[in-house]
Image (cartoon, rainbow, N blue to C red; front, side, top):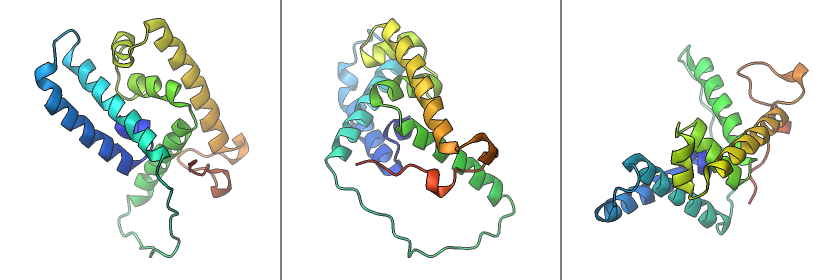
Amino acid sequence: MCRRITGNEADAADAAQEAMIAMVRGLAKFDGRSSVSTWVYRIATNASLDELRRRRRRPITALRDDQPHHELADPDTGMRIERVADRQALDQALLAVPEDFRVPVVLRDVADLDYAEIAATLGVPIGTVKSRIARGRAMLATAFHHLEGPPEERQPGNPPPASRRPTEAP
């Protein structure tokens, strides 16, 4: 869930670590007004959002093209690469969705929380959760469509052409 909210493995690992620390430190303060899972998701969501704020203050480093490429001997590698490319395309599309809409979509569709748990986690009414999820899903579909390109260029499992992949925003 942290990775889907932050959109980055390193930031997600930092957020998850911060969330675990916060859970351990706050365990004695847990009062039982909500379920433990709602409390945990709230902490993890807040840690992910905090990490996004910290990221905005950090400079972006460019990836280098001079890293060596290795041949892959495993015959199933192609299939795994396609699944990874699909997940990466989904992650890129998620990043195109504004945070206020992305977080409820991730909590519902990735973490499988119900509307009441999401409302408790985010501290907003259930109606707000439902509308944000509906709008977020629509934005996600639009973003994913733009990543894939026109229908004649799309093939299942293939990532979008490099010219159509979005670059990471600062």
